[in-house]
Image (spheres, rainbow, N blue to C red):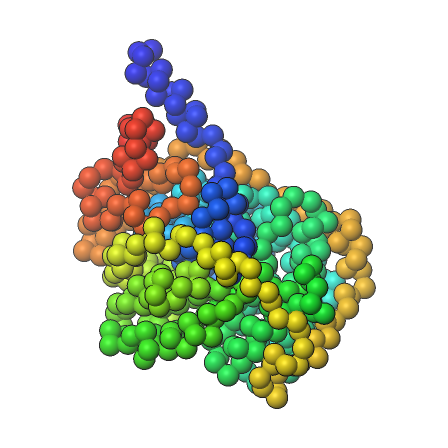
Length: 459
C-alpha cells in the first residue's frame, strides 16, 4: 500500500467516526451552542415526505427509518443551507439510528413532534385523550430521540389552540403535556432537551397563547410546565409585492420584542400566488426587522397535494428539484449569518411573567392556569421508564447518494453526497446545486486544509 493510500485509509476511518454536533440550549430569548456560546439561528425545513396521510403505524417505516431516502435528502438539505429539520409523524417502535446519524454528519439538527394525528390531544375534548396510553406513546418518542446529540428539541403539541373555542379548555393541556415530558426526560438522566409548543398564527389568540405557555406559575423559576420556546406557523407574507409591514411580520416583531423564550417560525412560506419568491427570508434573518426571532422552518420538503414542496418525489423513486428549492437556496445565501450569531446578553436576563389573569387579554382565553393532574399510571411510567427503543448515533460509513436526482431543467445532479462537517451546516458553507453538478462534490474544499482535501479525494 502506498503512503498516499495509507493516509487516505487512516483518515477515512477518522472522518467516518461518530462526531456529534454540539448540543443546543436555551438561554433567555435565544438558542445557543452549548460549547461556543454563539447564538443559534434555525435555518430549516419542515420534513414530512408523503404528508400527514403517509403515516401508517403498521407499515414498519416512517420518514426517519429509511436510510437511503434520508441520505439523499440530507445531501440536498445540506446544499440548500439547512441546519435543522422538523419531523412529524414518527413511530416510537422503529429504529432511527441511521437516519439521525446521517443528518448529524451533515450538520443538521432534529426538532421532533411527539404526536401523530391518530394519537394526540383532541382539541374538541382534551380531557378524553389525555391518558396514560397517550403519554406512553409520547414517552416512547422521548426515549427514541433523547440520546441523539443532534436532537435540538421536542414539540409537545401543534396548534392545539387555534380559535376562541379551543382557547377556553385546551391551554392547560399544553402545560400538562410539557410537564409530563420534562419529568420523564429528567427521570432518564442525561441532558435537558428543550420542549416547546408550535402555535397557529391566529393573531387574536397568539398573544395570550404565548403569555400562557411562557409564564411561571407562582413565579417559580423551576416551573417545568413552562414551555422552553414557541414556534409560530405563519403564512401571512404572500407574494412578490408583500413586505415586512404588509406581510404582517412587523406586528410579530413588535409583540415578541421582549419575549423571555426563543421564538421562531415553525412553519413559513405562503404559496399564494405561485411560484414563491421567498422574500420573507431576509426579514426573518434580519437583526433590524426581527432581532428576537431565532430563524425558521420553510414548509415543506416534498411536494404534496397542497403545493408547498421544495422537491418532487417521482414514481420511479427518483427525485426532482423544484423551482422553490433553487429560489430559497439563493435567498438564504444572501443572509449575513455572521451578524446574527451574537447573543443579546440583556435579553438573556429578562424575567418571565408570573401566571395570572393580568397577562391574558381576551375574555375567552383560559386565565385560571389550573393544570390537570397526571392520569393514573403516569407517575409509575415516569419512574420506571417505558422500556422502548433508545437511539444512539452510529457510524454510517459511505455517504454517497446512489438515487438519481434531477435539476429543474431535467439534468441529473452529479456527485451528490453528504459532506461530513464538524458543526452546524450553514448556507455560506454550501455550494449551489447547479455549480455542484459540474464542480464535483459539494463542500469539496469547504472544510479547508488537509481535512477538506481528504473529503474531496474520498468523494
